[in-house]
Amino acid sequence: MSSSPSSSPSSSSSKNRPRTTSAAKPLLISAGVALAAVTLGLVSWQATAPADKDSGSAGSAPAAAPRNDTSAALQALARREAGDKLALGRADAPVVLIEYSDFKCGYCGKFARDTEPELVKKYVDNGTLRIEWRNFPIFGAESEAAAKAAWAAGQQDRFAAFHAAAYADGSKEKGFAEPRLLELAREAGVPDIERFKADMAGEQAAAALKKDQEEGYRIGVTSTPSFLVNGKPIAGAQPLGAFTAAIAQAEAAAKQ
Image 1 (cartoon, helix red, strand yellow):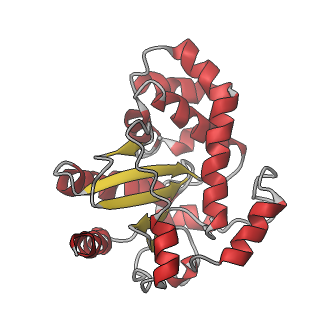
Image 2 (cartoon, rainbow, N blue to C red):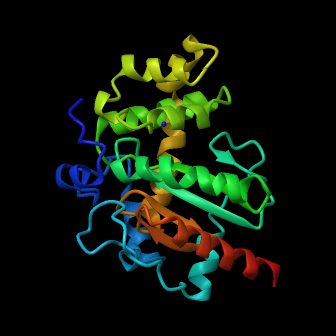
C-alpha cells in the first residue's frame, strides 16, 4: 500500500507511462526470463489494454479467452498457499484473482479504492474469491522500496492495512522514501517497526519481489494494474462490472 504523478488517472497517464521500457525493467530480470516471455507467449495483455496504452484506463473490454493450454498455464500461477501473507480469501476458493500492481501507479490506486473493496465484500467474504497480490514495481526505486515495505508489513500480518494506507487518495504524492514508508507502517498498525525495517531491507524481501517480477515478465505483463481471473487476463482498472462478469464466468466454469 514527491516527484510522483498526481493521483488522478489523467495526470498519472500523462507523466508516468506504465509500459515498461528496457531502462525501466530491473536488471535482476535475467536473459533466461526474457527469453521465456518470448518463447511462451502466454498472453497478449494488449488485448485488454486501453487505446492510449495508459495504465488502467477504463473503457476496454476483457480479453478473449486464451487457448486452453495457455489458460491452464496462467491459471496454474495461482499459488493457493494457506500462509501467503499477500493474499486474501480461502486457499480453496473457486476463483483466484491475481493482481500485478505498483504503489506509484495511479490506476492501481483507483482500483484499490473503488473496486477491490467491493470485490472483497461481494466475493471474498462468501468464499467465492481469493485475491493474490503480486508486487510489480515499474516506476523506479521508490516503487521497489514500497513493494518491499508492503512485503515486510505482511510478515506481521499487516499487508492489507499497509496496502490500503499506501493506496489512500493522495498518498503516493508524498512519495515512498524510507521515512514515509515507516509512517505508512505505523498507520497500518505494524507492531514491531524495528523488525519491519530489517525485513524491508532483507534478502527475503528482495527475493520475494524478484519472484513476483519474474512471473509477471514471463507472462508478458508490461503495465499496471494487470489481472488474471482464473487465467483470464484483464488489463487496467476496468469498471466493477468487468470483474464481476469475469468472476461469475470463472465460478461457473469451476463448477463444471
